[in-house]
Amino acid sequence: MTEGILLASSDTVDMIKGLYKYEVFGQEVWITTSHVCILIVWLSLVIFSLIANYKLKHATEVPDTFQSILELIVSLLDGMVEGSMGKHAPVFANWICTIFCFILVSNLSGLVGLRPPTADYGTTLALALITFVCIHVVKIRHQSAKDIWIDKCSPLPPWLPIWMPINVISDIAVPISMSLRLFANVLSGTIIMGLVYGLLGKFALVWPAALHVYFDIFSGAIQTYVFCMLTMTYIAQSYGDS
Amino acid sequence: MNISGTDLIKACSAIGAGLAVIAGIGPGIGQGIAAGHGAAAVGRNPGAQGQIMSTMLLGQAVAETTGLYGLVIALLLLFVQPLVG
Image (cartoon, rainbow over the protein chains, first blue to last red):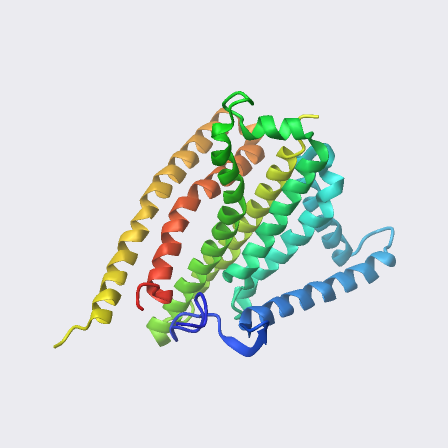
């Protein structure tokens, strides 16, 4: 129980297991199975990207199957970013498409027997904190200090900042709620699948595939879409009206 | 059979975890309402189905958060057991 949140406390449920321990400034730090799964996801994405890059450098006039799939992926993702960010889309299109691919492949990695890296709070909190930093960098760059102050005191007039603490708390709640949403959705799927396989034993033969379709593919895809949508909405909001 | 203090705390943590996931009632009702209104909107304006769908899913996912907080509390009580000293 002393090894950290949800780390190796049960055999039935697929928990994060520590693989290698080292110390940083007297603090115990673990290399866990999440890191290994992230590495696998990262490697598969990098290999896919290298193949795609090679393929598109030798693109043909009449696209073959693989090239058509690549063009479809890129145009779908670009359309998604364009649809919700409007004229600010080119700045953030690369970043949003990157986290979309990463979260989607992470959620789907439960299908091949990995523990999804997004079922570790560290991963989702890191993603949500990047969104938080983006929101506030955009806000500081594109809005004047006066506008930010008025926005922070918003339901009341700007000379009466007693409502400001509530607004600051709701700003801080953004990364927490985003990361907990993704984490809890993926983790609940992982735990239910672990319970089905662990408790039913050899009765869980073919029919858990239907559960995998729901928990890994449907729920994973929806949560990926929602995470990217919320990131884009918050960033587009922080540009202000100008 | 002797019940030690730790056993009592573990048993109460299990009950607390069960109570915490009752939080799922609220998002269930809320998501149902959102889906119903989404269906009505598609019935009124079938051309805007894509946009209605994405808005509905986004709203449902945000409404789901409170239920997931209950789930996280239940999981913490079951697996991390912060109350067991």
